[in-house]
Length: 357
Ligand SMILES: [Zn+2]
Image (tube, rainbow, N blue to C red):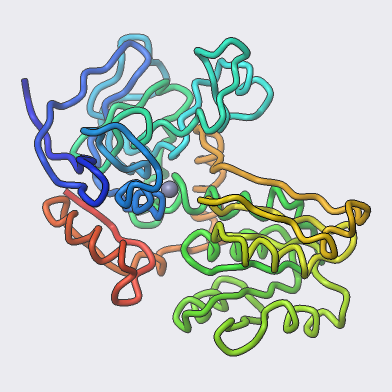
């Protein structure tokens, strides 16, 4: 059986590069040869044992590659075509998908819904930090890459850009809105870019790393707040003349940023939460308006599927956004353990790494 290299979860604290068989595919699948992939903050949660996955699973959910082989029932694609697939790979036929909740896909469930069920790569099936990946439901999930775009130009589409943009979209950002974004890691930076594309005219971003605040300005922030220097809530209320923001996007997954996001909302505003939380949240009575302040709190898991990927790539090919600066470091697949070390410890100003064969 032909083998390939893959980054495999062994136990908490250990993801290693090893050999495993090249995946078999079913009639609706595709085998994609990976040409570029990356490591996500979620993979670090897996590495640390904070998010459980099966021992022996191949990690990674951000594939850019070439179709190596198509399942016998797949039409509309050809072998050799450059494609991406979203981090979330919905079946397309569950009740959740038919309700538009592609990320909560539950095709085998009694009611057709499964929380986080759309996230399969590197979670419930083998992922793409490998030479090859099996893409399930290929006709729903393969998105051809426009010829003019490089791998690095589209590398953020499967997850970071889709998730970040959805922070603005799910928050209902409108033309002329004032938006605050808490945390400017890769997803927060994409939320900033998404808020700008959605028409926000005042964008205030919060982080504690100077390079990230500088990148934030280049992607659309009008004001940046360094939480080491000033209290973000007081500063945002000062910048908005005491009014607060229309939409506050939380892009970290912590009580402190969630609460700050709530505290800077104008009455009737929307808190759009993107972070992955690892402990219970509490909501303070005052900022919650005792339940009477017409607030909305929305949460989002990265949208996937080929139409989502097409839309994201269209914003890149038309020059509306350029996320190449987020790729700060490059490694070969053979060096992926080093890449985990650097990315996991946020060394050397890393934002995202590109991993190539
Ligand atoms: Zn991710």
